[in-house]
Length: 218
Image (cartoon, rainbow, N blue to C red):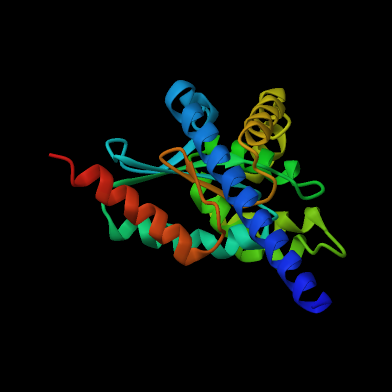
């Protein structure tokens, strides 16, 4: 009898935890949804880089870190999704440089933007990431041997990356990430809706549900 009661008690506790957890996630989604309606700047700032059509009805916001392995792995997958729905999805990049020293690479990206080489530079960073972003032995200076592949003026990059404006951009994006409860990268939002359960299939499903919602409207 004791074992039965113990089992029942455990089951009740598990059910209570699941209910509370589900309620918390719903409240979080509702809160972030209200942010999307009332303060869209939390998701898109004037400095934010965008990929895709400006007229797209589905906006995918990604809080990313150039030193994040998962961000690098997801980058081609995300672009494939966007390219599979031409003109319907817009990707917006926000910074969440949580790894030690990752601000260094964000500043390089921002400096590359001035040369019109942002996406080329990010691709080079992601491909060469294992060489300079080892969590056990990070060597940020090694990035410079790969940057010529992006067609950059490296001397100009070294000058421009020290622009104080880039520090403010990072601070703003980190503040927005904190408000939106982004704790790890990549952090995804689709039309203001957070990706609650992380995974590629889950992201595709969330995007597809928004595509149906937005492009099935009469």
